[in-house]
Image (cartoon, rainbow, N blue to C red; front, side):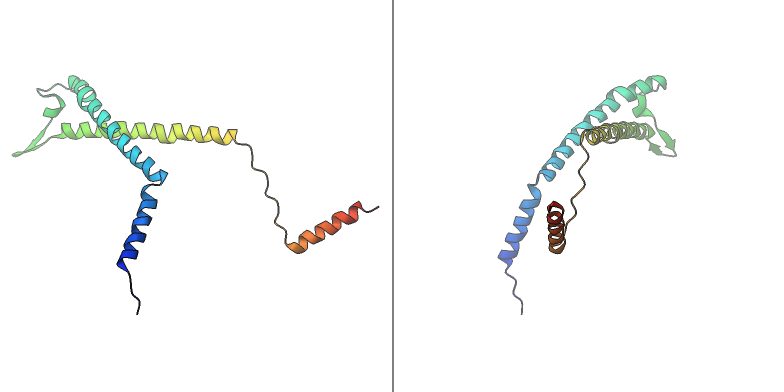
Length: 143
């Protein structure tokens, strides 16, 4: 019969979690998520306070884009809010595309060009092959 010590299991589980949680990659990812959320708020504000009011100047209504609604029977469908969210998404997607694909791709290309080519790895010889190579070299140097 196998006995499981719950204290030992909990300790190893905690140790594994500690190793995972405090690795540099996880902390970098958390910082990225926080910065991404702040960036999302900035873009949201840009769309709601600047871009969509400018769009509503072109297509005037009493409440701007917030008042753009489709009325079917007694139901209202606020498509103006949806359009605002679509513009929000497009700006975030464009910013991510420019940063990840273009900027980081350019950086990676620069690093590849700067790095010298790696030397060809030496062939790994067995002990027999090493001995035969030494004998050959000795015979070559013999008068």
